[in-house]
Length: 216
Ligand code: ADP
Ligand code: MG
Image 1 (cartoon, rainbow, N blue to C red):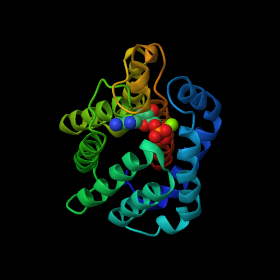
Image 2: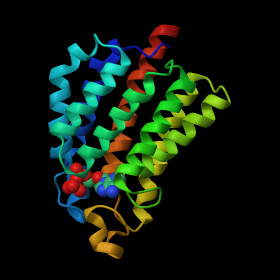
Image 3: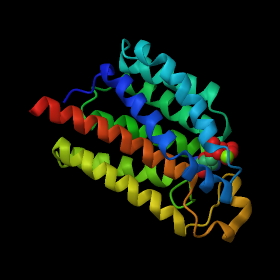
């Protein structure tokens, strides 16, 4: 399957839909150990991307990632706005030197996640969205090295993201607002990890469906 920008409207719609459907649950998670605004922050960015989705589908990947990054940076706000903005702007820079096959995507995604780590001064195990993004990047590199077939890669990404999200429940937050609550964060899933997992799940769903259509 070729990753084509023509899929962007479906991808953005699927993300908007999954965040809307889970908005109450995520807000409750962010209220428990944050300030409760995470879904509203994200939805500002998603609404802006919904308005741009047809225009985005006409661009090449370098421009797509750049435009998404700038939009998220200027609309989302909160910690997650600058982190997702950084992710996409780095994807754009890295995509200049890459063909977007599995290996290429694994490489650029790894660079994007490294930039998020740097921006948030955070790493795995600190109860953030990085506890989803880091294992997904690690898995993508392994899958590319082992030439795993795409349908299997997609299923496994969804599983890795789910496991990463759930792993935040037993972590103590050491970054972001939640870190002020220290051990009181134990037992709660991180809201940012949850929305990362949901968005990855939505992307995997669209790509799996597309793959099914092509191979039928
Ligand atoms: P804010 O915390 O500023 O209100 P949001 O509510 O939009 O912003 O986003 C909160 C999420 O951002 C957290 O659940 C966590 O996943 C993520 N986050 C916060 N700080 C960091 C950081 N330093 N590094 C990585 N992720 C972070
Ligand atoms: Mg918040």
